[in-house]
Length: 250
Image 1 (cartoon, rainbow, N blue to C red):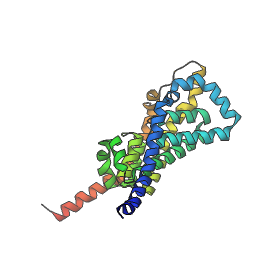
Image 2: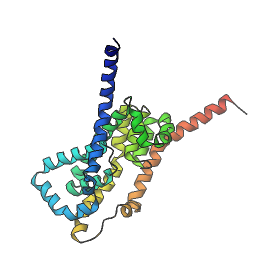
Image 3: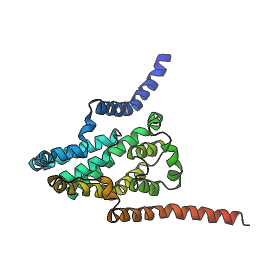
Image 4: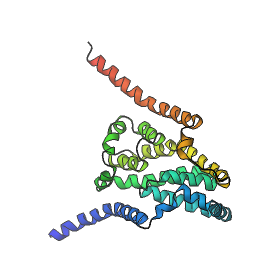
């Protein structure tokens, strides 16, 4: 009798554990096989001609493979999505490179987001550490606006935001909308770096991510979008303070 009563519970546990187990195994294999060595600017520089020839030979297949690899890398929380965005810009240009990057990153983020919502989400919370607590208040005040800001300005690691949003109960709609639109500016910037990398590599020049990001034409639009995204949060706080003064006049 006891065994029969426990069987559904055990089955439910295994079902909830399966997504996280797959993600953990995939991430472990990724590093065990040293696959991260392929996702570097040096590797792109050394193989740029072969990669462009591959895309030219089968553009649709290459795009599908790129989206799949990018989404899988984000889903296993590989901390190197930025360089993949550069690859996307290099391989496919701004169109369809940027849409492909945004779509792939959103798909991968949703996978780990949904996995962190399971009863075993605490295991993923351990990976994110105290970052989850750091984001809690922002999500409580305005999920969509805060998600947009987090995606727009990478204060926290991309993978940590995915986990924190799931653990803290952010709605799927707000997560998807905030992620999809929030990563477009950054995706455009990094894809532009990749788009310009081909000529730089051919000329023997170096390509620096940080150098381009601090240029005014790159930085100012991102700052402006961040300010706009923070306006709803600021208005909400002002409203709370006004309501508090009305309740407790001096």
